[in-house]
Image 1 (cartoon, helix red, strand yellow):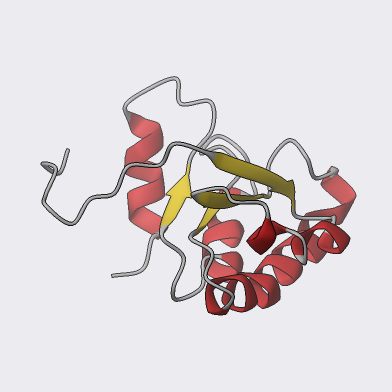
Image 2 (tube, rainbow, N blue to C red; image 1 turned 180 degrees about the vertical axis):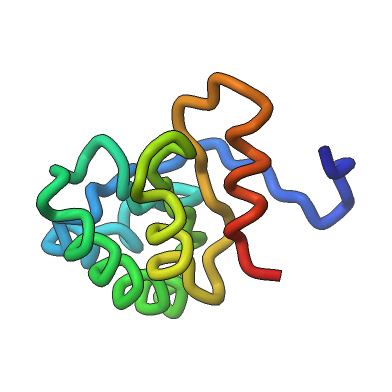
Length: 117
């Protein structure tokens, strides 16, 4: 684990938005949350995973430009979708990637293996 540094921020409030609900994204900058989380996991039906990734890849830079701190919640390491989530939806400027349902030390390692740089 990386030690905390002086540039680490505290997030008191985080607002989740399902990645299949782009109609909600325009409202996110005005809601006052410290960060927004674009959710590719439970909020997205299996048959809409590809669509959701594309939506996040487009929306994240727009939200960042609007002043939002953006996190992306990917699918779990034990799913067939995590690597594609990272490759397609974790775009430059995203602050963090959230990994759900971590049940072993192997899960964060699997995520680290597919994260860029």
